[in-house]
Each structure stands twice: as structure tokens, then as C-alpha cells.
Image (cartoon, rainbow, N blue to C red):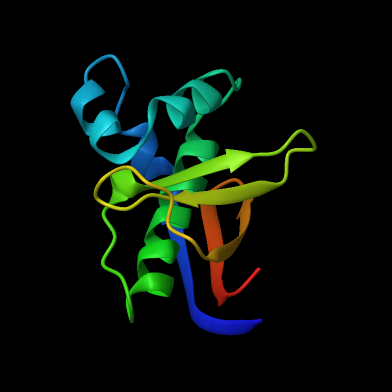
Length: 122
């Protein structure tokens, strides 16, 4: 597999704590998919998960920047049945972009980070 791009991002979790969801619904809907919001708000503390997904979207934008301009609504972070995160990248028409993108998410008390590698091939 050939690497087409890499991206990394780190976010402050407190940044997301400043936006209570009941007063910032529009903000969250502009950034996250309904699937992502459902996933995060099922957690006891949703803010580390929101920050990690935001970091993944930023990292994906950086990783794809050489060959595709992405907007946050085109990027979705999902987890498989074992909890391993992956990315779904959609084009402007909602069709999945054919490429392989690997993502790693992590968070601690104050920060969340994500690393994305985009490869050509399967």
C-alpha cells in the first residue's frame, strides 16, 4: 500500500465542555453526524469522545489535503464491534470515497488526539 497522506490533531476536552448540548445543538450538528452524537452521548462523560472525533476529523482533513478537500460532514468516525475506530469518508454526493484510511484515537484527562493515515489500494 502506498501512503497518500498523514494527519494528526490534538484537542482540549474542556473546549467541548464549554458547549452544553442543550444550548449548542446547531454547533454539534454542523460538526458531527447523528451516529457520532448518539455514540458520544451514550457515554457517561461524552466530552472526551467528542474531542477525539473532532481531532479525527481535523487529522483526516490534513491527511486528505493533497488530493481531496473535505468538510467535517463528509467524515464519520465509527467503531467496529470490538471498539476499533475507523473512518467513513463521503464525497459531496454522499457516496463513500474509495481509499483506505486508518485512524487511531486517544484521550486522557485534558486532551484528545487522533492520527490518520490515508493509503492507496486495499
